[in-house]
Image (cartoon, rainbow, N blue to C red; front, side, top):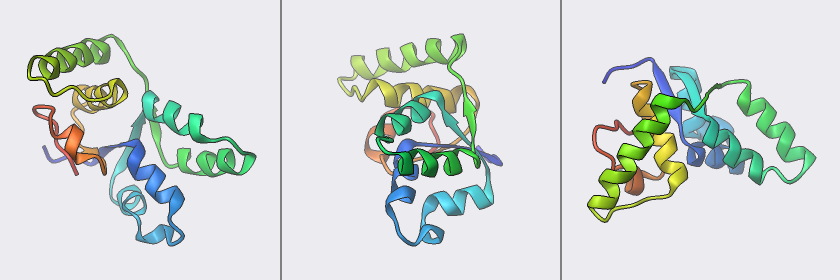
Length: 128
């Protein structure tokens, strides 16, 4: 799947926020190479961790580089299918990651993540 669009997982953004040398991060690389998106779930996860005014300001800067993809009927249907397949194989992962993966799949985008172990359990999901 060759795409100019990319869904960014929470782990990539957290890594960016933690690093001092921002230009050496995958997030920096991706925002300069792709049209970047996040799911509403990633948006939620990041906001949950923003417990200071400084963290909220940092996230505001990050969100300016991204488009937020809403959950919709197609995404939730696909999420349920992914859940059923993983459960049948006894390979369940976090619900939030299932929703993030379904967002990428429904929009036909690869997903950039540091959590390849869990996301690789999902069929037909391209990982960066």
